[in-house]
Amino acid sequence: QVTLKESGPGILQPSHTLSLTCSFSGFSLSTYGMGVSWIRQPSGKGLEWLASIWWNGNTYNNPSLKSRLTVSKDTSNNQAFLKVTSVDTADTATYYCAHTNWEHWFAYWGQGTLVTVSS
Amino acid sequence: DVVLTQTPSTLSATIGQSVSISCRSSQSLLDSAGNTYLYWYLQRPGQSPQLLIYLVSNLGSGVPNRFSGSGSGTDFTLKISGVEAEDLGVYYCMQATHAPLTFGSGTKLEIK
Image 1 (cartoon, rainbow over the protein chains, first blue to last red):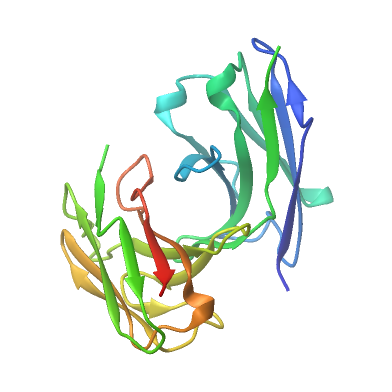
Image 2: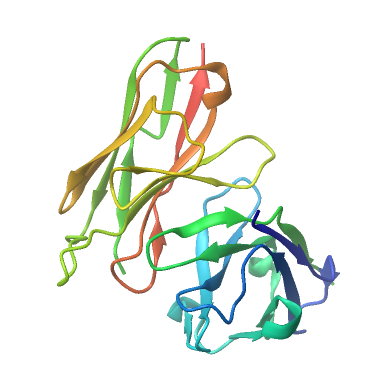
């Protein structure tokens, strides 16, 4: 059974760096073809793919966020991480992590964690 | 970026009615290996999205067979054959053929 759970600061100030953790079970990020993706959703709005990290360490980021995103993983502890630098109010959203493989993109989702950027 | 246009934006249906949602892409979603990475998700109120359909027409795990997907190239359709009360929510299409991955703007299904 695949489960994922996001954790984060809840609230942070503009210009700071957002750090999120995705803790998962039921699969391993050392297994060929496995990946974890990050998606966000501002309240009442649509979904935006942010980044994905794969079993081999390859990462892919949405260029719309330029170089503000960093994804990484800790395979031994079944965790993936997302950092977003220089946040502003436009980054206020619910952030989801999701299980990914080449055929089943976002087959399983975490419950999401709400991040509010406010001074 | 690939733009996915979903229509309608809102859909109102009675229980048992069959409905369809369209997703049109600004570029063909067929890749050079012959795969089409088009997906459908349902986000029920207050919940995370769930995968309904993968690779255009394949039913996700545990998804009822009243859901079906079809299409090719740039035109895709999600059909619900006999809407049930639990089907209310927002439906999104998503493409993973071209980077960056993009979602449609969503179709809200309301139950009359």
